[in-house]
Image (cartoon, helix red, strand yellow):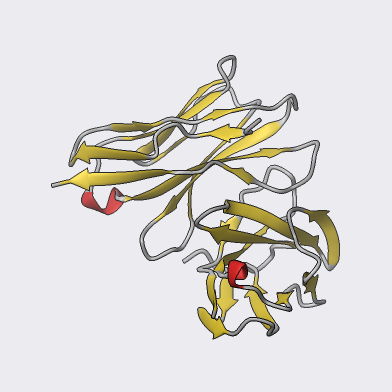
Length: 115
Length: 113
């Protein structure tokens, strides 16, 4: 079974609109961390946001926020007021604290922002 | 700029050859991770080192090996290269605690001809 599922292979969104990228995860470990990374066409992996499984509040970093619904095992990334520079591949990832330190990545969602 | 450096940026080589990829972690980070990103397999964790010692192993082939040196830089050695080894290889670093964010380097694009 996949540990991280990103059901949207691609999305097209108008500039300035908000966008939600879906991510569901599967773990039996009570302690885990969830990450979102952005990979522009240049190839580098850019860390966006982190949510710990015990965090009470949803994480926010500027225009990025994480809609964390623990019971549903969902960790959707919300980008407010999208910009052309947000066009990239977005990866959801998870680390299970009691296993090892590796991060498991989803297959990614390619986001296209339209002018 | 994440603070993680990787060299070289691009590498083109032939099947059967051996190459070494190098990574310098962010200042103060003790953990180094190696990942492979290919079109068909996505992002796959290969191996992790913490303060010079191997800590976790993922989908790393026996033809591949890595080490972390006393100055904390790391090298990934790929030998008997095959066409299927062509991929983007990332190094990431973190302070070392399980909940720490991993910061990625720019990657080395390996092309095996």
